[in-house]
Image (spheres, rainbow, N blue to C red):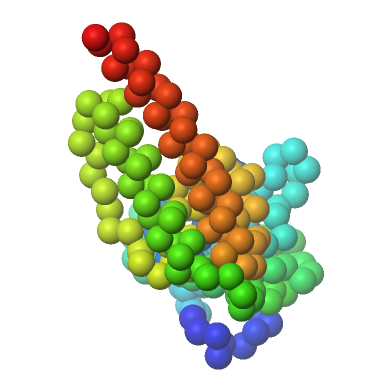
Length: 212
């Protein structure tokens, strides 16, 4: 999906509890509920795209901003369930709901990061350095090698990748998804990683003290 795509369109929507999808990230799904089996059958006949929204259990409503999932692989099971592999594409904002049964369909607009006066490349370098420190300290604490996946170099791709790895912090992830400034997203991630590094460093000191 490119910036030249139609900026407003109808999109089938799939709310998921405790899950935030980011552009460029893969998401495997097992589709078993009848209404979403209907949805997948429909999208497989078109452009294979649907929107993923975080379901907020506190408010009982889906978030207003989500990310498009595009089906890249699918396996239809004998009882019409699906196993899917999807990939995060463009972020979107729900303008209104067109219908809610048998599954939600929304009128959405694509959203992109606004140009920033800050230097996202310098912030990206800082975030990568903090990330390396966190990995190194985690390895020292666990006495295990941590397999490091390929980390994106571009600021916006890096910001999405880091945010997608803040597992267990869904509300923070949603806030980062909604941030429309690459530098602001990277600054927040640097704050989180810096705090994590400090905590890990303190635990490492304690471990070394008790070893001696």
